[in-house]
Every structure is written in C-alpha cells, then in structure tokens.
Figure 1 (cartoon, helix red, strand yellow):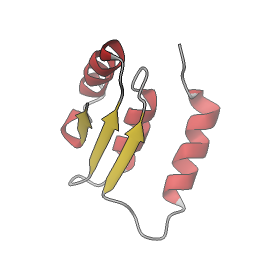
Figure 2 (cartoon, one colour; figure 1 turned 90 degrees about the vertical axis):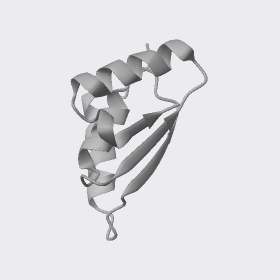
Figure 3 (tube, helix red, strand yellow; figure 1 turned 180 degrees about the vertical axis):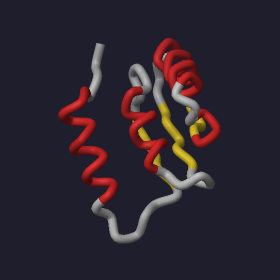
Figure 4 (cartoon, helix red, strand yellow; figure 1 turned 45 degrees about the horizontal axis):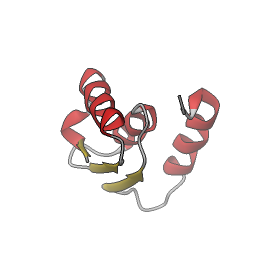
Length: 79
C-alpha cells in the first residue's frame, strides 16, 4: 500500500502553506488510500475544491470513504 506517511505529509503541508497565493483548487493525480487527499483538502479554504483522479476503482472507493470519515468530502471530487 502506497502512502506518503507523516514525514512526507508534513513536507506536503509545508509546501502548501508557503505559497504566497493560497490556492482554492488542487489537482491530485493518483490517490491510493486518500491520505494525501485529506491532507490537501483540509488546507483548502471552505470554498476550495480538490479533484483527485485515479484509474483504480478500489482506490477511488477507499478515497471517497476516507475523505467522508475525515469530513472533507464536500471539498473533494474523487474520480
């Protein structure tokens, strides 16, 4: 199972937070288990949107479930 984990997740968070112009839209290519999707979506503003694309139906299902449990699903469009 591929997962970015806590250490790489912090790198992702830090890179996002350093942006001068805070994005309201993010595109993720490949979501595996949804961990990075949650980390990205929680940093977006309330009107922000994450589009996460994967070719594996099991990954898509799992990401939809996990973003729902993390209560960021309203910001996520998982395809």
